[in-house]
Amino acid sequence: MKKILFISLIFNVICCTSQVVPAQFPGGSDAFYDFIRQHLILSLSEIYEGEMIINLTVSKDGKILEKQIEKSIDVQFDKKILEIIDSMPAWEPATKDGKPVANKFSISIPFYYPEYLEPFFANAHKEILNFIKNNLSENLTELSEFKTGISQVSFQITKDGKINKIKPLNIYKQKEIKNQKKKLSNEKDDLKKEKIQKRINSILFFNQFHNTELDSKLEKFINKIPFEKTIYSQNIKEEIDFNLEVVVINKNHSKELSNVFTFNSDSTEFKNREDSVDGIYFMFLQQPIFIGGIQNLYSFISKNLRYPEEYQEKGMESREIVHFVVDKSGLICEISCDDDDNLFKKEALRVVSLLSAYRYFIPGMVNGQLVKVFYNLPINFKLQVFF
Image (cartoon, rainbow, N blue to C red):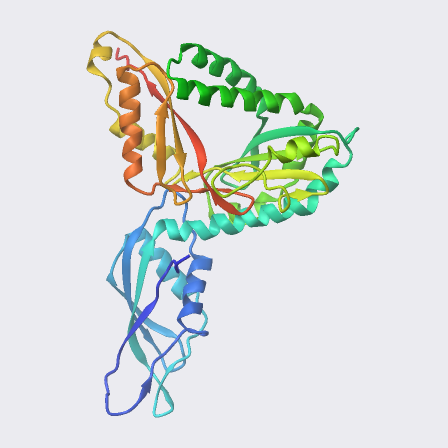
């Protein structure tokens, strides 16, 4: 990972006949950079990019006498940086012939928003991952019978770090089987039919070992995860979606399931050794996050969506589900749509394809690793009624 804030110091020395050792932040430029990163708090809706240049004058006793912005990124961003500089400890003053002197210099701060965010999410993810590893087994040992079982639970972290919307995913899996079977009966392409059948088989496999008691235990465990004490609530003031999937493997099924739950960095599946605690396998998924927040994603879609004129004249409405993959770099690919070939589908695919031109997402993570994650985006075509 490249440094988020690259600090360069340009010193303007008035007298060139004597040696001047410039002023510096305690610990040097790296420490200066770390101080800013630790104290700079931005929400997902505050998107800043560019270069900020600040002229500083440090007195002979290490106090900052003057601050002047030579080049701005944004008024609000500039204000945050200046407030952080005001809170800094005393600098090590410049010296001339071994004696402290006042010193004026410039600081260049290039800033790229995704690189600012990623370390926060990565560190917060690992904090929760460590909690799961240290506490999961203890919280699930009270199962009435240590039998093979699978549970998938989705949940959300609110802006204040509270846990919300805990739902066992099997509810949606049952509905998905019906939808997938309907797609299979209507599909004519053999390759697509094979892909749909594989999806149905995986859902049926999940249902075979689905354990409702494990669902209940897992929901209670999730409520114990201290998200409010992590970087998620301290620095990222947006809602974030997660999945926690747990597999309890009885020794009678270990051989059968070991072939199913294999993990690699290109898929959100299990890794047999590192991701298990006392025979319990787990997968902690942090969903991809749209830079700017989910409301900005909806706003992007709304601004760029064009209602098909032919369907508008006929009063037709629709809801299209667009599928795509957010890769490990935050780019989207493999864009597709389920419905029959129509103008709604074509427009939904067109507007989502606009997202592929830039890196709009913070990538998903599973058990501490960046992964490709499948993403479903509903797009509504609804006519407005005016009275």
